[in-house]
Length: 326
Ligand SMILES: N[C@@H](CCC(=O)N[C@@H](CS)C(=O)NCC(=O)O)C(=O)O
Image 1: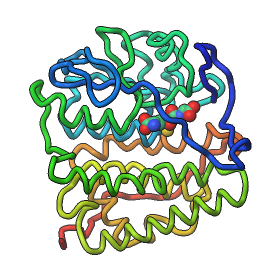
Image 2: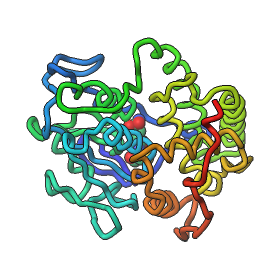
Image 3: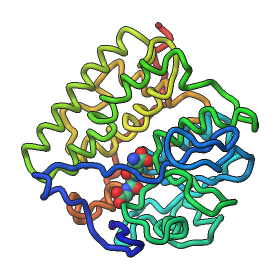
Image 4: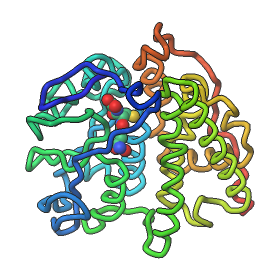
């Protein structure tokens, strides 16, 4: 694992010690937007109009942030409109690579590169920052549109409506305030919270992140006992953002990140909700537990020095759920 500084690769992990043992995720910096007419979005520059065949997603099947983008590409019917390549699940001293010797890892079929960091330096030769997935690439301008998943999913949700996108609107105008309001704590305390728990390098920050995570999971369990989805009876972006963490939880976060107060399988509402989302047509094929387990258990040697990938647990998200009671 490492990062680019002025375009040069440095094999360096996360610096939690200078932050008192806390893990802090660095903000993403490449934040342009694809828009229907190519005008500028809320951040970044203009010149990225929605077009069939022009854009490409680089993803990891292991990564929850990339998983959001994979889900939106699938549910919005964009698979023939936006192409996609999948990195190797192991993130070692070179960071993400395009080695294709793992089931469903594709290599780089657009730029023919061997490491994801080369995609970054092709776009920004003096790039400084972590080399993260997902990356939304513009084949025409040969540059990165965005590496911020929360914004990529908003583009996929609405920018391609005139170019064959289908499926529901997961961020409808009338629910935006409520969606934003629930996304905020879920991002800090659950999506990023599992990382804050797992990457904490001192006891105090670990316990703080752990408590904040499970307090919110308890709150979500209660909320989902009263309504079908996070925002009433409409399946929205907020649910997909939570789903990607829940689906990894029992296989990885519970053990590897020491998030072990309770399994998701032990929460009646959260586990039924997780199964309902998993069973939405198209979603199961976006979930690659082999990539997920291989990535986490082999890519953080300070947490799991031998890199043994556990064989369990036995998980079955296809059994019936009870969410149609709402
Ligand atoms: N804010 C980014 C975060 C993406 C992210 O951190 N991805 C992880 C994989 S799960 C990554 O590529 N990490 C590489 C690193 O930290 O060096 C997003 O949501 O798109």
